Image (tube, rainbow, N blue to C red; front, side, top):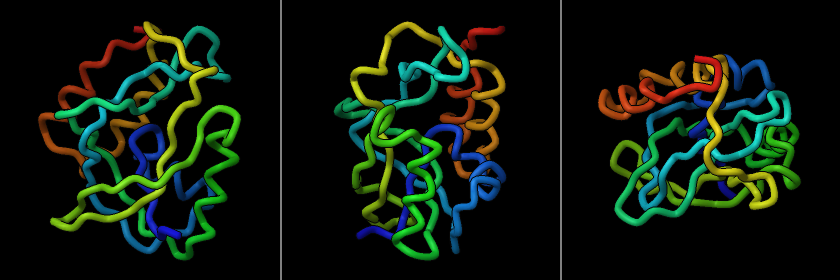
Length: 151
């Protein structure tokens, strides 16, 4: 079982992850090739708004934060916050981090809770932007330009 967790959404904010009780021993930038970040997962807390998801997209890349977990069982703590397996399913992906390919857990929104055309709330997007030091400048600028539902 992998001992890494790849976060591409609000859990790119290390403070949020610590508050959620995830015990990790390392944190580094990572890239998931062949996927694109989208905001199509319907928000439970904010009806009509969305949260992050990743979808298969050959030739594209999602940047995020790779947490080295204290123990492989730590990932179960995140299931509650991701409302897995109802809202998100957890799967193993291979990310690139610091020149190495690493298997890591990540979450994919279930089709039943996805709606295209929604926008995230600004306070949600701020959690993604809090991962700035782990993102390339271009990716951070692209993410910063995301239109929010409450802008």
